[in-house]
Length: 119
Length: 465
Image (cartoon, rainbow over all chains, first blue to last red; front, side, top):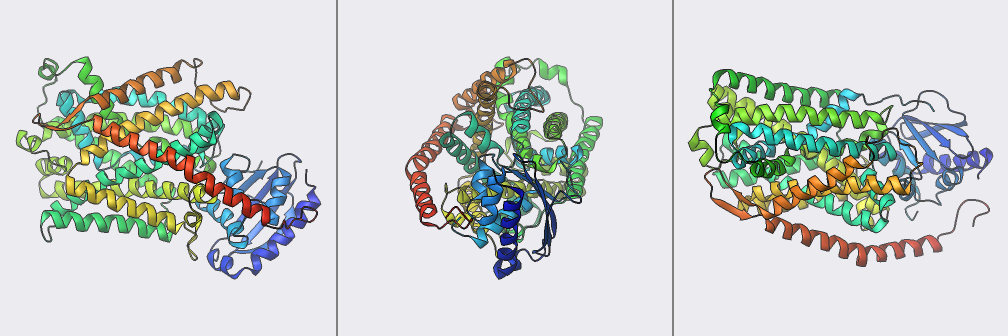
């Protein structure tokens, strides 16, 4: 199980990777969402705010009314934020669950695919 | 857990499910139901098919309650049987499903060429087919989505229009049901044969399952499917009987691909022709657009899962849409449409779609039974009542309907034989074998390559390198 701090560290790196990727920023330029991440095994929750493709904040706890809710094991969340896991595969196996529109699901996956094309 | 900012309500689930099933090809398929049975009594077979689809909808409701995800069909076959089975059946379903575009684009191009004559009927149809598919591809590339409200307005307007026209037709046309009931064609065998083709009228209602992730309560999807099948049953029953009764014998015998347009013209003159054409275009646009939208996302996911070439997971740099998947499916749709245009065999695609739907309903019912055994304690917000009785009934009924389709002969209104349906079984079997061969021979290569890439890739997470 990954601790809350481990996930926050992963999120911090994920934020830098996303915000520094010009191709991703261009693709997500009109994508503004409030995203909740739930670690189902530890009960930890995290809130990410994306404004026009830029991640403006990541904080512990579930804040506000989300546009997207991602639920997975803490280890999978941590690996996903570090780019060590293909979220699509986990999603197709039912191990990562997403509550969102189909477009948002593709966009969440697109982040990992653009930053780490080999994942 | 917090709720989403935007959630889809029951009203939109019903309209999405209904909208996917209503297409231009349904009018021709409905007339085929009327031809097999007795026109005025087509409603019996349509209601029978609707009742069986209702039972199947119960199975899909339980599966959606178990796996409320856009990856639904692949996921529940995977867990019920194996990953290989889920890939074979998933790709078989998606690829043959997109073949329906062949019939749909042929028919909508027939509608457009009957309204706007440019060169000659053949080239007009060719032009409209290509324009129609390119238009759908363009809006998919651009990532244009129908809002829930827009979907509601379009679908409920189409349903209200069909019901309204039917009521008007019943009031103005003399329909003799008792005489029809005395016809020699009115037999139980014909009722069931017509019901098998009638399944086509409901094709796509289950494609609403991917919306589960946008609802507050997963049961909404199940309820929506049941309401949609009910709504479709009533609407089609009325409209097909009205349309059949509103066409002249000469029009029926001509084997026209645009019976609804002729019906509109008979009923309201030029205004009817124009209104029915607009409704037809709307129906084709919504069903075809949703078809490409869902299948391209499925192909994208398969690309990401190393089942299809990685190119399928490429996203458009500006719109984040899976452009390679859209391009491939659009090209495939154009090829099927051209083949339909050159051969005029749109009935072949319709019959194949009906058989494919029967097949997938059998698979869904088998999944319900298998998952009850394999995962008895997994949370289900909806469970089909009466144990496994209903899934077993679905397997038997749709299995028999599928066999009934394969052993039948497709004829036009005047009784002329068009083709033997066993050819449909042959084409489907070839597709299934190709999918099996691809999954057995090619997919392991992609999976192996992906595993090798993963091994050589340095883990970024601290302590896991």
